[in-house]
Length: 511
Image 1 (spheres, helix red, strand yellow):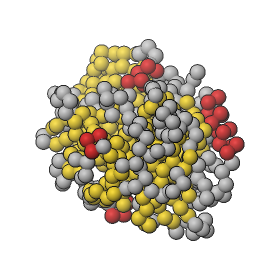
Image 2 (spheres, helix red, strand yellow):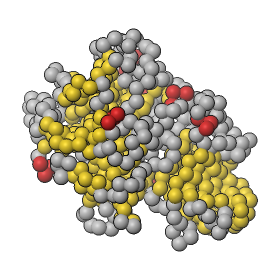
Image 3 (spheres, one colour):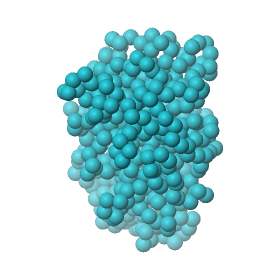
């Protein structure tokens, strides 16, 4: 997680924290730009998802949170839980900043065998948080800090937390050393940690019998994208589609404003990448997806789930939302496909989001030359369409269309490029750089001359899953409420649109 400027006191009033949690439960989210089926805190700033763990039928989401304001600062772990990854219940802050130490990103695990010894009777099973302690001795010198790995434990399903008295558990006495990803490695009967040296572009692996004493195993990197610092590693096993029980290990990390992944093998000591070293593989090709990590302890018959922060550090502090700022992208299920001797990650939204659907509007076929307005107006919807582009066409959809052209989601048939362009969609003036970060694109081959688009539009965030999740793009926009038309377009020749379906979606926050 990136460090920004801090402008507030270090005292944390617990009464205010509890008030935030209660307000989050009571308030039906109705503010301008407020997403209705993406996770947002009731108030204030959030960034990286943390401590994703499933336990006793509930998905726990911890997250970087500022209890005091709408900009980055006073990093603590906020907390919410869900039974389906779409409907969330806000809980009080889990782990708070204290004594000059902010609580940066990390993991949560279930210590079923009580390896830590924190459980004092057989009815207790500890939930352990492993996080980076970001220590600032002098608040007038914010860049003079140290980072180490620390732990805290809960004996009541994550409701109340106690910081380990002998923290830190792993300390290299370095300024930048953060974001532990921890999981139980069953073949070796040990805990494994992946943690980054950001400026060196290295993921280090450690092992421990008890989450307290850690031994260095190996390093991975530099590799792939090394233009910016590395953050937020996550290592998980992902099934290979159509192979029965075969799985590969996927290592994620983030690079300041984007993410990458590697696919290969992990033997309990070291990770070996099996994809071509000359290529960079992204889980998301839009501007607004970062710090994605996977859930621990999910049931064996369930696909792994990735959750990312839907924002961009370039303009994150200025997006025009209040009284909250930032959101999580839709949780995504993961599978791998082998294509042209490369391992490719496919993603799809978790199935619970389909439970929000209202009755769809649908049409079997449109032949479009120039543009066609559809009879549905919405900024809160799900869209499926099969696009059959013309030989030279640039074609697709426009969302948030009205007084402005809107967000374009399109395909350039000649150059085989999927793109999103928000250059004429909503407010642009809140940040100078935002306006120059309008168009994002990625190569995508059409399957049998067709592109399958699955789109989720939630007021200020649009996520596109193309060709069954082979390519994914996430992009924020901030349109006026009346700009809610949906339009098909095709330039440089006609294009066909088949099996068009639009569902307006209910709010996940309305009770």
